Length: 155
Image 1 (cartoon, rainbow, N blue to C red):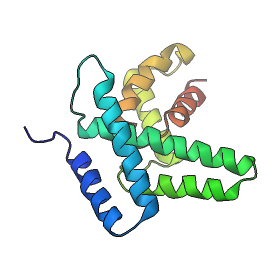
Image 2 (image 1 turned 90 degrees about the vertical axis):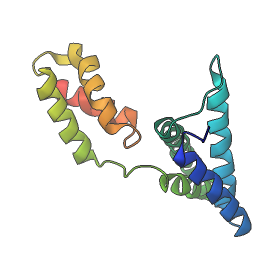
Image 3 (image 1 turned 45 degrees about the vertical axis):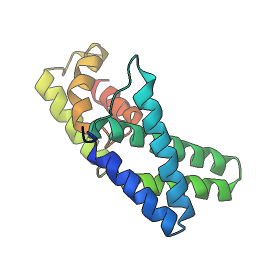
């Protein structure tokens, strides 16, 4: 059976190319993300092939870790380490869908509030609205930013 994820195949062949090109950052980042994908595949009760959607999820969380680490290194006065984390995040961004702007997120949340009839229900409707928003923003926005916007609009 062929691999279910075209994205995973692309990551593999790009890794081979990066190694040949002696692109340290790209090859180490791709190696790390492929390891994360493999770990996710064997994490459950039975081994499974990740779909493209699952792979995007892994890429998103790895990119988020890099961004958070970069911020932490900046705050800790270690710009060279922050730079390395940002360079890795940039490699990962090549494989992620276009990221949504704050305006995009606000518009999607507004539409979801209307669609779910959550207006006026306040925080009780949080789960309902998040459920409607989640599939539209998956891999394209930070979950915390989305939740904050939902809270802002329901609050």
